[in-house]
Structures are given as C-alpha cells and as structure tokens.
Amino acid sequence: MKFLPALILLSLALPLFAQEKKWTPPPAIELSKLIGKDNELAAKKIKASWGEKGLKSGKHKWIEETTLLLGVISDEPVTAVKKDGTKIGDLTRLNDEGLYALATDVGNIQDFAYELKTTSGKVLGNGQVKIEYYPAPPEVFRKEGIPEGALHEHSWTDSKIFPNTERDFLVYIPKQYDGSEPASLLVFQDGLRHADRDLDGGLRAPTVFDHLIASGEMPVTIGIFINPGRLKDQPAGGRAKNRSLEYDGLGADYVTFLLEEIIPFVTKEHDLKLSDNPADRAIAGGSSGCAAAWTAAWERPDQFGKVLGWVGTFTDIRGANAYPSLIRKTERKPIRAALLGERNDVDNQFGSWPLANKQMETALKFADYDYRYWWGDGFHGSRHAAVMLPEMLRWLWSE
Image (cartoon, rainbow, N blue to C red; front, side, top):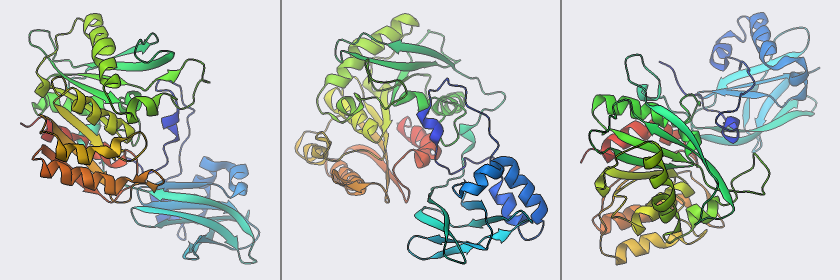
C-alpha cells in the first residue's frame, strides 16, 4: 500500500499547474536498514539525492513516514541533538570521504529543533523536524475502473463584492453527471491545492469524489474549488492578501460572492442543473477556510445545509471566536457539520485553536446540532484531513 509521506509540503506554495523540478528523495526507511550493514550502498543512495555540495551544508534532512534521515560531510564524528539537549543519535561514517548519516524512527507527532554537533563541539548544521504521519486510505489514489470527473480551469477577475481582486478556481464535473437530475454541490475554499489529484499530503478531493460517487456513498456532486482573492497589484506567487478578509470576517459578503457571482457563472458556463435543496449543498475548508464555510452556512442556511471543516479558525482574528456563544444563544439552524480538530494545533496571540474547536463542539452539542467532531493529535494543517476526507464525506452525505 502506498503512503503519503510526512514532509513539509513546499509544493503547496506553487501554482497547481506549474511544472515542478524533478528530484528523487533518498529512501529514508530503506537507509535505516542499510546503514551499518552496507554503508557503501547507503552512501551511494544519499549522494545521488543530495550531492556533495548539499551534504557539506549540513542542512539536508528527509522524513519518510516517521523515519528521519540526516546526512553531512565532516572531518570528525557527528551527533544529532535536539535543542533541549536530548540525543537523537550518532551519525555513522559511511565512506572515506567523511560522509556521515543517521536514519532512525523518531516517532509520530513530533515537532522539534535539532543540531548536528561534532565531537569537538562544532555545529555543522541545524533544522526543524515536524512529523505528522497517517497511512493514506485507498480512496485518495486513482484506480482503474473508477470513472474520473473532469476538472475545468477558470479565473475570476471582475468581482463586484470584492473589487480589485482576482482568483483561480476549478470546476469538477463527475463522469456520472448527465443533466437529467439536479446535482449536489460542494464548494472548497483554498480550492486549487485540495483539487490536485497527485499532491502528496494533499486532499486529492476529486479522486475521493470519484471513488465515493462510484460507490454510491456520495451523490453526483459538482465541485467548485476556489482560491481566495489576490489583490491585482500584489506580486505573483505570494499569499492571497484578501484571504483573511474573505475567510475570517463575519457577515454575508463571502457567501453572497459565491451565490451571486461564482455559482451562477459555473452553472451557465457548464450548463449545469444544481439542486436548490440546502441539504444537497455543502461548503468546505480548513483553518480560516473552515471559518468561512461555517459563516457561509450560518448566514445562508437556505443555500448551504452542510459544512465540512478541519482545524477551524474559530479564534479572535476577525470575530469568529463569537460562534460558540452565538450557537448557544441563537435558534438552531438546519446545518449538518463534519468537523476535525487537532490537540496540538496552534496557540498564539489570537487564541488557542484546540480550545476554540472544543468550545465549538460543546456549543453544537448544547444547541442539539446535527454534527460530528473528529479529534486527532496532529498540528495545524491538512495532513489529517487528507486521510479523513473519505470518512468525513461519507458521514456528511449519509443522512
């Protein structure tokens, strides 16, 4: 079975359609078994990936599942030590060129800084290790015989609700859609990265849709994977500067943007029939995108009756911390919510993400909402959501 590697996904910063430079990572798990038994072969594999220049820098590391690989060229023995003084392990000398390496299982759910120190106390390199590994379910991989929906690229540059912004989005149309019956709808915030079928560690949502629609565990559903707005004068490649305004802000602006600009365009452009039953219309996102999804349904439960979210930013950035109190004090709205929280999520000046999500959970329970909260021990991000997506979607559409 293939697994999603637990690594820092620098590729998330790249445009979805960019051509990435090919690079073969060193096989950390294999090397953990080779080092000390066949050092010559281990050295060959490490040098083939990182090169001599890179190994001299002391900055290279690689994480495969929960195995950490470190490599460096040194004139004297090297030890890897956490910043708190805990020893990770001694690096093994692999050849006469002074190539030292360590490949060891450091355990799951790890976040620590480390240094590479020589016996004389010289620091050759340092770095940060963050491990959050989950075996990937089969639904995130393409499979022969499973009909694949089509992805259509679009840009939106003339918003009346968010002027001076531009954004890209994708429309997913399942193979099974023939227009004979109205389709369900699911809108994803931060959409392009979640729509990438091949991104390691990503949600690969269209492939999950393919599997669940084919199995009948999810209705025939149109997907809109939309990015937040970039300001037209901001440099290319940077974070979308309008994201916080759109996602963290309370009120109906963002959902109105979807209902009056994006969804009408999509239905007309692709000649689609969408169900007008809110129980057939869902909205999804992670972090601030989760807050945006909840706000959309909260403001317009007549349009969105389902929410899918993870590591929700229900903290005091632009007011989403008010939701637990609002949920308790407001007549229950017809919203079904599938939510995921992480116990090691962010805790900063805006609040505690684990606490905020626990307050959301208890408020939903108090107000007798139709909801389910899953909890993990992970960090802020989409790693856990990527493997939980099939289960969460099954539950969301199971009513």
